Image: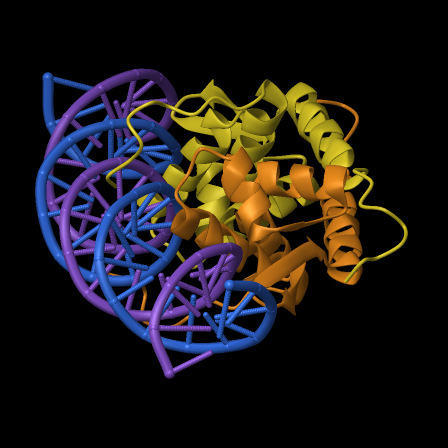
Length: 110
Length: 110
DNA sequence: AAAATTAATCGTATATTTGCGATAATTATG
DNA sequence: CATAATTATCGCAAATATACGATTAATTTT
């Protein structure tokens, strides 16, 4: 990518917000969260039945949501039950509230 | 990408939320919005002076924010003044409020 | 009209994301 | 112990994203 060699440092808030935003930036992952909201919890297989994607693909999206900290998996062999990670979900909620409560000035200048 | 040949259709809300999330998923773009909040408005050059990235790179990030609808550019030759797109910003705010107000059940099942 | 200023766009290189099938891993069932 | 069920992971291919320098475009200044 021909990056600048020194890694740029951003504030923790900025990094975390970007990280959560990235996890939420794919329609399938939003659909997974929606399903998780309807069902409270679900197995990987439930999602595979509902979403028109390969099992491995859905597994990968679940991994990304998990890596971002938004969901957690409970191993109940041979299945895995997923649900929201309440604490981190609330953290994300607060970060986006902060983001959107930024004041851009009531008088638009454009 | 060896995609599934039929394009999957998601709800407008899901598509829009994902689109906004993607625009917000890069630290530099969040930094641009922050600067825009501090200054109300700014020229491309102001950002180039503040952020440790090439002019072309910043221009590209501005384009992405603009394509997502989050900012708007006002041409004042030879410069361009950017500021938030209030209407779409509020729309994004509402979408994320909806997203985070999803109820995942008070009784955690994991 | 020539030079300077400012920002967008082009071309290119590299990294990351997305998606799939195949395979492996784990545990329950027969 | 073999088989079935379920999910994660691997390996690959293709699409996107990211970053940069060079160039172009538009307008002002000299």
